[in-house]
Image (cartoon, rainbow, N blue to C red; front, side, top):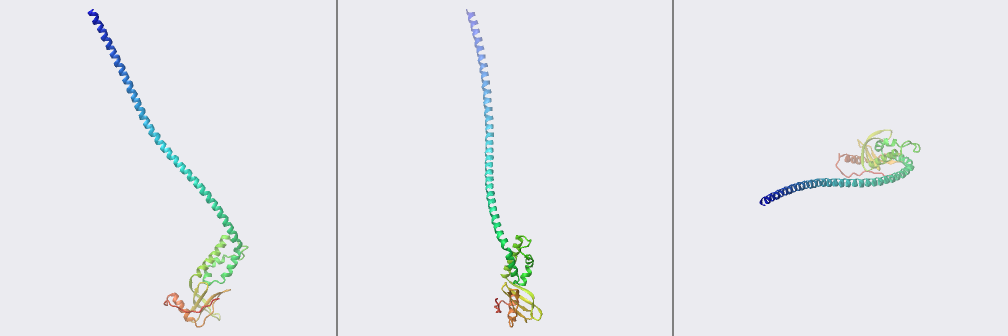
Length: 251
């Protein structure tokens, strides 16, 4: 009986040992699977974090690009609107200029004719300065080949120079006919387009000038040589500034 008991205990111990080994193997396998699972989960989490960062960066980039494109579209719309408005304004301006040009074209011939008559009344120094413009005035306004712009430019140039001359005092040296066909050198002081004074170097001949229908007239004024000479000397600076009474004639 004792031997049987010992044999039974031996089988029991062996069975327990086998069971324990199986349990250890199962546990080891379970642990290995758990570790593997945790590694998979960890890698998945790491991959997701990286992909999430990439997606967020992509979203920001796309959002920025979308904002830029929207701004560009708004700018194009604004530019197109501004271009349309400018085109409309230019068209209106062109129409106004066309109407104004028609008015000028209808009246410029008469203006040129009147201006040629006025040129005769201008003083010689001014006429000498604007001769190139005067020569451009057409003999027959109805047959000229000059463009409207060229004709207007000539008229404006003449009137502009005349206005400038009229607003200043101009001194020149000129030859003056004192009678008997004699010409003498005189100093002339033009007071704009309204009048002038002249005197020779000896102070013997002196007089005034004023515009006439066919040009300027230069009558002598007896007894005025000293005053007129002093006036020109004051203007030139060889005499002190002073009040100088001189004869005047308005016509």
